[in-house]
Image (cartoon, rainbow, N blue to C red):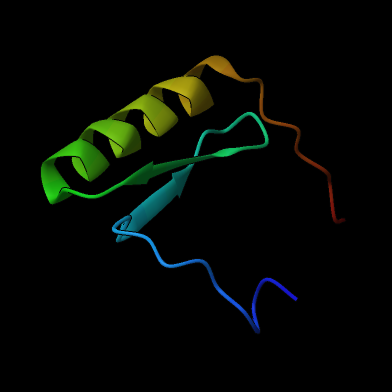
Length: 53
């Protein structure tokens, strides 16, 4: 329903929080800060890897 009837907003940019949510921004400069925050969160989270051989 949300995809068929989107809410009108000024938020042009979004990025994952790395914790199951999203950060939205109206300005590109804020978007870049949100990306930095996302990358910092990722660097703190352990990465699970799986062997394929």
